[in-house]
Length: 134
Image (tube, rainbow, N blue to C red; front, side):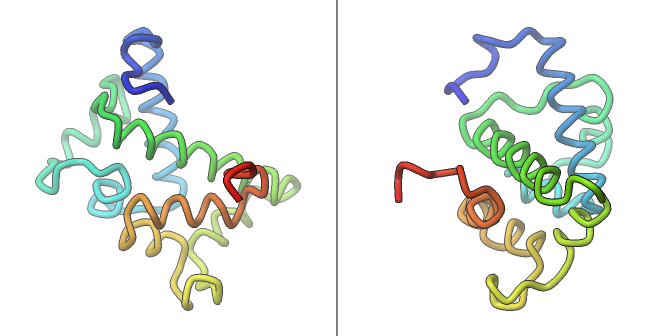
C-alpha cells in the first residue's frame, strides 16, 4: 500500500476498509487487546474507538497500520483460497497450535511477534507472497 491511503482512497472507502478489517479480526475471534496489538494501535485505545472502526471511522492512516491492513487482507484471502469449500476451517486454523510456529497459534504469533509475526503467517499461507524476494 502507498505511504498514505488518504491520497488515493476517499473517506467513504477508508471507512469501508476499516469495517472490513475489523470484521475479519472479529471473525478470527480476537479480543480488544489482540486487535489493538495486531493493528499496532495505541495500547490505551478504548473499546468505543474499536466500535467506531467497526461502524464508520477509518483506521489511522499511518504506514505501520496500512502495512498491517495489507497483510491482514492477504491472510484472509489466503485462508479463503486454502479452504474454499469450508470457510470455518480457516477460522479453526488461525486459532490452532502449529508446529511451524513453535506450537503457538497463528493469532498468538501475530500478537506476540508484531509485524514480523503477521508477515510470517502470511508467508506460510500465501505461496505467492514475497515470491521474488526469496
